Structure formats: C-alpha cells, structure tokens
Image (cartoon, rainbow, N blue to C red; front, side, top):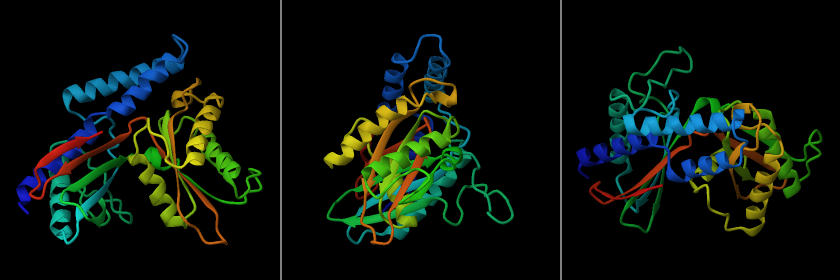
Length: 294
C-alpha cells in the first residue's frame, strides 16, 4: 500500500468529520426548528446551532472546540495489512492536529500532560473487521467528552425505575438517561442504545449505533417501534435544546441488541451531542477515494 495516499485521504476524512456537519444531522435540526415556538429559547438555540454549522463548514474550522475521542471503524479485505493502515491512520491524526482540524485533546491519564499530536496509547481508537471485500470501508466518529460523560449503564431489574427485564424496562432506562442528562452534553442529543452484552461490549455496541443514519429504521420491528416510542416520550420531557425547554430533547434514538448471559441484563446508553461528527469513506486497494459517505 502507498502510505502517502492513505495518509492524505484519512486526513481529509478527519477534516470533513471535524468541520462539516453531516446532511442527515443538519436536516434533523432544521426539521426540529420548525416544531419549536417562534422566538422561544429552543428556536434560538437551534438557529444558533445551524449558524455555527454553516460557519464551520465555510471556514473549515472544527464544529466544536472539544474535538473528542477519535473512533475509527475499518472494514478491510481478508489478509489486508492492518499494521500499515494503523500507521497511516496515526500519521493522518498527527497531521490533522498540526493543521488545526483536531485540538490537542489527548492527555496522559496519570500526569495530565498533553500529547501534542493526539497520537498516544488508545488514541486514536481503532477497530478492524476483515471480510470478503476488495475495498476499505472507513467510518470515523469524533466523540466529545461532554457527551461521553452523559452515558449510563443499567443492570436490570432496576427497582428505582421499576424496570424489569423486558423492552418496557429498556424504555424506562433510556428515558432516565435522557432525563439525567438534562441540557448537559449539549442537547439535543442522539442516544445509542445496546440491549444485552457485558459491561464493555454494551458500550461498544451502543456507540456502533451512531454509524446509522438518523432517518433510518431498525431492521428489527420491535426495536424500530421502541425507537419511535422513546422519541415521542422524549418530546414530552420538556428539556429541550441545552436544557432551556422545548420539544427537541433528542434528534434520534438508535437501539441495537446483542446476546447476554442469563445472570446479566444490561442496558447501555451512549450519548452524542448535536455536533454529531460522523463521516465515512470507501477507499480502493491503493488508498484512492471511491466514495464519501454520510
């Protein structure tokens, strides 16, 4: 693989993710604005968000000063050189940081010292999945710390919520997470939910839900209905953008499910802020761009 092509296009993926709000997210915010009362706090916040998104796109600057944790998902051909791809990814992160598309946002957990390039242990976060394919599918999520702090994990049954081991119990947990967030995490947010798994796989799968488009529906009928019901219920909470009141507390709810052991029934909720920075690109065998996604 030609290192320079991979670094160039991975850096461009980072730039687009950091500076350009995806169309499905911006469209959701515009539709939400139409349902808020004119001259209300909610309409002002949503209008300001749209102005910020337009300005970031025009000037090529980050949507938010917290450029967050970088989470790369790679789908690669069987036998692909993932070590070389990881090296290219790290170089792309360092260059994107140098050029201002990423803030120096990675610190040593013990000393608090900053890593100037954002390349450090577990930064960026990278996963590889090999499959019968000829191209490399790259998806990037920039997960801000404020929204990450609003994630919650529940173990059912939960007597405080009167939540049992069923989809009604799941609904109660997800709404509780939205209620506990209030305006923190920069509402309106998007919730990624995992039913099942263990404590670690639950969080990973809940964040994988952020790779879905906001206007899609779960292929599992009962989960699609659950997503729709939680969205309706969330509008009645009255939290609104930035917690200032209104209908738009959430822009989306995406629910997935994985297997679990009989003794455990976890419901894991990850929170993404309105600056839903998620992009993707399909790269050819030599690193050339075949198609941008989202």
